[in-house]
Image (cartoon, rainbow, N blue to C red):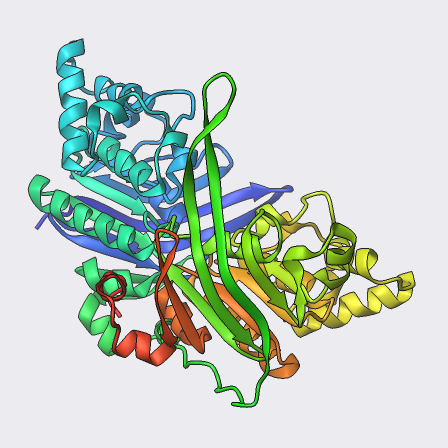
Length: 527
């Protein structure tokens, strides 16, 4: 059988600071007609670079050698006209973050129309009809309204569906999906995967699926190629690779999928956080006088508590109110109800009084690159809290920075580097170090592992467990990744549309859920 995509002896290097950095080394694989092949590996293994090279999308800084053929035709990076015919027509891409791939200034209809017009000669009416049909195929509702919408007016799942519609607009022979579900919650993720499977079957497409999530690979891939340091270290039928891995690196990846739960806490452990009827409603204003005509009910009467040394996991779909709880607890947004932390009602505290206890309540955000100042060194970022809450000499501060960097697994000699000089996992360690340097009593972790690959997630989870056991920390762990929640949490809150629909100990929630919504989440996550 002639493969749709064939890659032979691929070598990719990048020129940086006068030196060549090798990203891919002697890579060979193929994707047959109607087949789904998964490329898996840690961040930096060369997965995305390999995918981009198949359509000559790497730019002038890249040096690409090897033979790449699509449907028997070799790719010539210098033939721009041939590449234009190829891109979007024979091979299409779906990227991880649609917001960066979609033009924020153009409507959905305009972007879809442009994609079609490049390869098909249609009049205005035919174009519009084609756009409507495509949006129907990808499951977009209220199509006529969505056609005139801009990307920022759509949810994450809707934006990804629009990207898929653009990718299949010209019925390509192969679809390359680069981490298309990473930023989505489990139910939306399941919907997108089912949609891709249906479209692949309907159009007879092949698919190259790039991911670090082995659970997804198990669900959708016929064959899997495991990448490490720019090389394929193992490839084969998905079932065989998962059941009988041969390479040590593959075994390491599979081990990172299953992480044991946290150690039990003492029954005598005291409650450090008590929340009663926390409510966050955002007013909707209308008219010239900006009258309140309604409310967006982000959080409704949430009641829960957290004990010393305990991790409370909070799960739910996007928009369920998880991050709203975090913001309310940190007094970053106004809320109603009682928030009692360490025997203090923080809801009634003024700014100066609140500042005194902020060192005991810290938060780690989802995107470390967005929460770390690009103009500050690692040492300056970590020491920032010390300058606000403690008066220590420069030498003492530097010693504390060195100690906490070692604690979170960072080399103190790197402290003068800037955030862009670190990997995603290292940046998250910096964010954790910034929180830990003040020796807090409770840390709120808002999706701290969602942007990381499985092995790095495994490292961060183990680090957080170690710190919890050593210092008796209380955690509120917010995530849509149920595997990570299971590994971290003693108890779990399940949220839906601002309400806590179910709560209980972790094993009860995972083994005997009472609510249908919880069962749906577990089914979508394939747990």
